[in-house]
Length: 299
Image 1 (cartoon, rainbow, N blue to C red):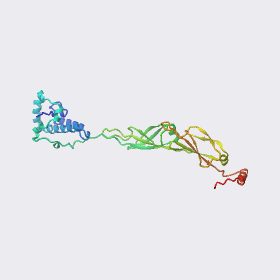
Image 2 (cartoon, rainbow, N blue to C red; image 1 turned 60 degrees about the vertical axis):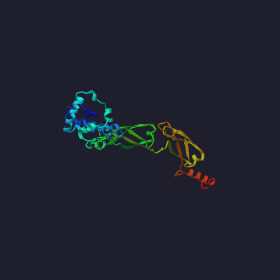
Image 3 (tube, one colour; image 1 turned 60 degrees about the horizontal axis):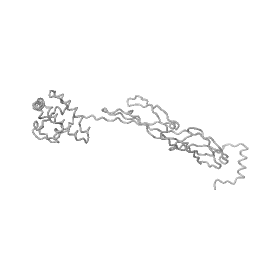
Image 4 (cartoon, rainbow, N blue to C red; image 1 turned 135 degrees about the vertical axis):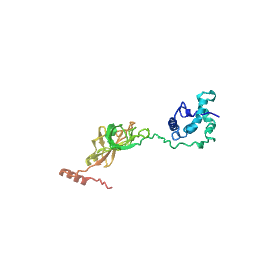
């Protein structure tokens, strides 16, 4: 027969303890090795069974009194012949337990104490929101402030650093700024979806920037040089002779630039604009052109 030091198993150094002390020690040890917190850990499972076994003996006055006599003999008198390691305790049969309950202990006889409520740490929920920023702010980067109300109705302000070159619908995560964690768990995160808003002259499409330029019929027919506004600088653009309305001119590497430094193109769409009102001289010139021109746009 192997003597088991149930007090040591529960983390107690002596048998001079009350039933309340035993109960507290049991709950502390059981929480530490509970299977719900140590899934697929065989050692913790065996340790939990030993803790439950020790508690069954020591939590009852009659069995504790009987056990204390043995404890005083083997431990109190420090009989070295009976000192064994924890490894031997788990490896040997559980005949010692049978002294107190009269039958051999099977694993199924040690049931998990359902009264122990294990408060498993749980991470708080994430909060998701979105903010709109301009193409220019996205291109150059900017720090913005956003204010959110919590469940108590209080407003909290966050400073969000928008990195230059952020992509449309890219998310920024603020660690620990979400809902509070439960039972000591980590707080959730604040996840901000960035929506890049087009302005009146620039539209973002992937890494390309698109813009429009209005030209007159004679500029389209004869060619000209015009200035188009880019995201950083104004750009001089050569309008080729005979350009058609809706035709696009691509200016390489003058579009949007992402965080890795990869840059798209500036795509300029030409729109031929006809004057709504003509001077008498202009009208005469158009009539003359109508008479002499052999151009038929419907052929």
